Length: 278
Image (cartoon, rainbow, N blue to C red; front, side, top):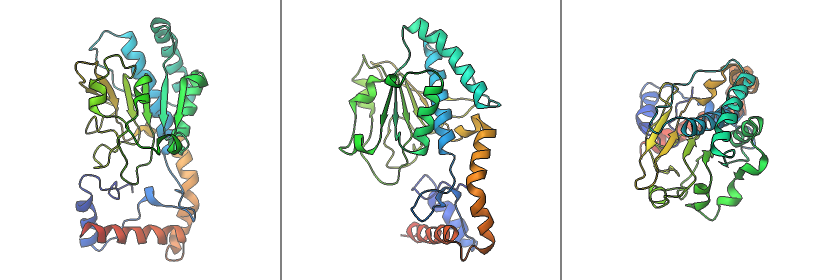
């Protein structure tokens, strides 16, 4: 399972205490790693891919519809070809009205998630010069980063493992009435993490209600997409890719006491239980 309780998320101690009191063991799929510390299976690529798609769709909506018009619910697509076709058609109309294609920043661009985000943007027809790709080298000096506000869409794809300075703040949004940024896609969805680098909203959105609007008066509001199940937008592709990566580890589960990937997972569980009791 994905328990979402190893990074101090809201309620993490309660989740771990139930396993501990019941003498159970949590082998969290999110934290199955190989000898190099890289996850053996992850939905990250398709989360980023879908995140960019939704971000572009929301931007198109803002351009094409009257201010205040609610963004509709999202449904899954049968395949990536159908998704690309849908977004390309929307972009053609919106960019014609706006006068140009949107500029997008992808944060965490070198990881699985960021790669997926960038790949979709390119597949949808955005030229490379409209896509800014940042990773650790660009952010090591610490935020906040005014450059984010120069883009129409910001897609956050980082894997948060330790405290970092915020990328963007509410004060930045309020104090920038002429900013380009109108859509923020938080693929990472760490809003309940005390070290969240995007502390401009709290909570999550869904396919039924995809947008959370952050009021930034006197500047324009910001539309936030914070869907924590984005790979469901492409259920077939995302599931097939995850299963292919996870299968070798599942074969090793029968002898998990001797399989390094499962030994590491159990060790981490016990470490986190001890941490929850401090």
